[in-house]
Amino acid sequence: MTDTMTRIASGLERAFASGGFAAPSVEDLRDAAGVSLRTLYKYTPSRVEMVRAALENRHRRYLARVFDDLPPAPEAALDEILTRIGGWMETEASHGCLFHAAVAADPGNADLRALLERHKTEVAARAAAATGLAGRETHLLLLFEGLTQTWPLRGAAAMAAAGALAKTLTADAPA
Image (cartoon, rainbow, N blue to C red; front, side, top):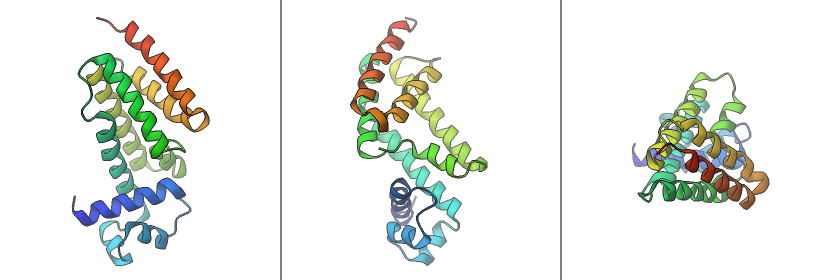
């Protein structure tokens, strides 16, 4: 990805995260991307492409923040993943998951649904690999999605509950 495309995608991600997918005008998106309208359309020729670029940027940033340099011990890795998701929610996504919001804004868009599926599948697979919970990807995804959706309502209490549920998941895991 070029520096220009990275700058555009980052700006679009910020704009959609703060203003939703319907509200920002093209001018708002141009300003958020920090480029001319011509450059914005050169790299992202439609609003759907703008949303896709924003979500791809979000996907890369989320995976790096949550999964880079985890502790090697599986239980410690799961605790760290939950802590990082809580930190992400606090600083990046206080309204919930941007991928789910994109699909909710355009429910008939198969490409957005596929991006959501790819993102969640990769999150679950990486978590299972890091925590030694292969075969429990759906359990992990349910735990993370519960935390993500409950965070806007309960904040730190959601983190505490996710941590308690994680302990039951690891205690139940086959040796």
